[in-house]
Each structure stands twice: as C-alpha cells, then as structure tokens.
Image 1 (spheres, rainbow, N blue to C red):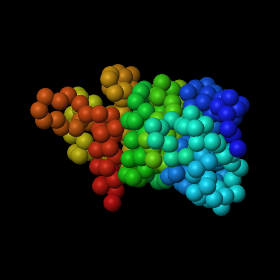
Image 2: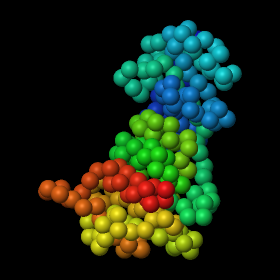
Image 3: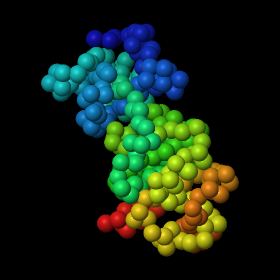
Image 4: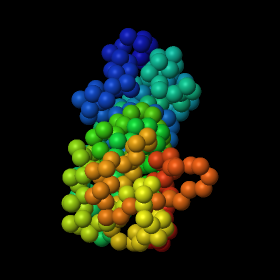
Length: 256
C-alpha cells in the first residue's frame, strides 16, 4: 500500500504526467480511467495503480494478474490528472509504428496533421479517425505531444488501435505517398473544388493544418488538390477536428 505522496513511484508518476521528456525517456505513457484500463492491450501494460476504495470494490481478480500497486485514496488523487478520479491509472509502453505499417491496404486512407496544438483536437481526431475507417495518422514533429494525458483521455481508447507516425517534415513524406498511388488533399480556404466533389475511393490522404495558421505554404503547395468546405455566415474556417471529421466521413461514405 502506497500511503505517502513522497513515495518514489508517486513522484515518478507526477513527472510522467507533466513532462514529455520523462515519458519518452522511459518509453511509457499514462492512461487514466476504467475504460482506458479495460481497453488497453494487456501486453502493453507496464503497471496499474488503483485507489484503495476501487480495489476494495473490485477485488484482486479485476486486475487480470497484472502488476499493480494500491494507493491510499488521497495519494491517488494527488497523481490523478482529472477532477473526479475513477481510481485507476495505467502505465503503458509507447507505440512504435513505421510508415509502412500505415500502408498495408490496397487503397489506404490517411490523415496528415501539421503542427496541431490542442490536445482535445488531437484526441478527437484520433477517435473520429478510428470511427471513419482511417488507416493511419502522420503527425509533424511540432504537433502537441500525443502522449499528453489530456490527448490520451480525448482519444477514448483509439490511441490503442489507430496507427500513427511522427515525422520531422510532412513535406518529405508526400513523394513517398505519391509513389504508392496516394493522392493528397489539402483542406484550404483557396480550394478549387468542394470536398464532396472529389473521389476518395483510391488511396487518399487529407492534410489538416494548425488551428490558428492553417497549413503551411510549403505543404499545401505540394498537395495534389486543394479542397474547401463551404461556409455560410461570416465564418472563415472550422475547428481542425470538425474539418477533419467532415473529410474523413465523406471518404467513409464513398467507400461504403
């Protein structure tokens, strides 16, 4: 039983919550909550931490023979990243995909994210990508840390199932994708065609830019086509996660 916030494991958990450098150094990330625990691949779980009250409620069998530590409720509250802790926190090993892992299907559907900064947007995009049948996500190096606890929570478990690759420069991956017959579409205010006027039934990749600045000139200039989402009223653009969702589900509709 861990009964003190000065326990070395508690201090390490706090560092893992706050610092990407520590997470990457240990090659792990944190996932909090019952849903995240129950959906986590068992082979990736390094250790589970439970509050005393949840352990007394669920019993030892709930842990599925996984390595675990029990914490006093007040200690668990100190390491929790949520206002109303559910009493369970997992330390999991990070995922390491290759670009080729995203291209196993004949006509893959991909999402390329450039410099997204909002954890909620990132998590929502991953969750929606799984629902829309996307085969993988590419992220630029300046995107928000995917293993940020807020991002992990927003994925609602999709982080376990959606392959992703972080790259130095998205621009450098476009020739690789084109060689494999994947056509790239940049969501852009200057798009010639509306998003639903293109054909996404073959290999396709959507490019989504930063929440404030949109896509960089360098990346949009290399896209095969610029597409736009029609706007009414005085709006110029949509939230990045909303725009990505519209595009992904149009591709999903065409592929049914």
